[in-house]
Length: 401
Image 1 (cartoon, rainbow, N blue to C red):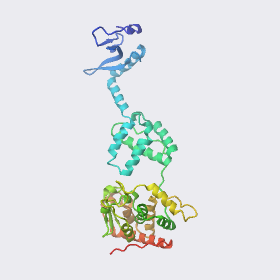
Image 2 (image 1 turned 30 degrees about the horizontal axis):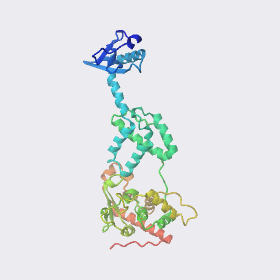
Image 3 (image 1 turned 135 degrees about the vertical axis):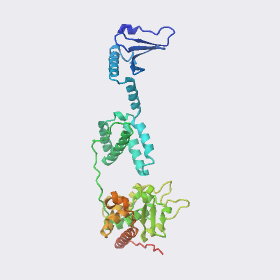
Image 4 (image 1 turned 45 degrees about the vertical axis):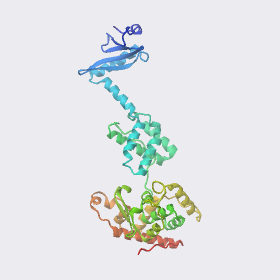
């Protein structure tokens, strides 16, 4: 029959029939499908090779005849160009189910075993909370405008530094999605960074070193701060120190690769002053971790640091300029350099793979430099003791037999 609005309006399913397709004589392949219950839909029937395919365009209630014919002509034109409209529709439906929220869960499950615990927590927080407003959107529809708008909102809500980190985390996610074939492009590319992170250059001067030392109490955090000051190691590595890693007899602390930032084993020679601090730490029965009380190492860094700042500022005319625990690492490295320690030895102390140990040199330079490292850390500890004497702080290091 030739489709017209009146002829379509009177179409009914014959008695005893549950499914019937009626085609339009004027547009081959275009038809109406009648089904039990009164459901009527527009369809296009066509062939792809030897296979017959059928595409549903919509119900008669949602599309009038003219609109349905236009949709049918578009679909048939694609068939003429060797494009399968139904396969194209299935692909779009599948892409629509690949929302940011659903794929973030898959991404995080993969990264949980690859990232260091603290890095994973930050990645999870940014993806699950910072980018939550885009979770319901298919990733193929997320564009640069969406990302840039959200970065701007995060900069206002959380500050430019947090927004910059959220941007980097999302970029990492989309890079993974592109490699997995889930997205064609990374929409974070070419968006503006809310803040350009510049390397910190805060160093504690000699007076501040003494004041911070004096502000440390005989508890986990106070001991950690003093050990950070004396060894120049990373906060989380020291906060999760284990008794099994310590060789007190040989004055060594050996970190396995899974506990270091660069995943390389690291050995830290321990000065007498460091050993005296460790000797004061009470061991907990059945607990290998030196610090902390829960399942992991030391926690509560922010609260403990704020309390230390308050104690440190008691005797000052004005608050000490802001500093972070990581600044102790930079201060130790700079202090060792000023005492004459060569750069490659300082890099070995810090477990850096850069500068003199980067590239091919880093692969073939397997020298532990233990004597040189021990000398550097001993000189630095003696320098700190001298500063404490100047500030009238009594320090009696334990002498090894």
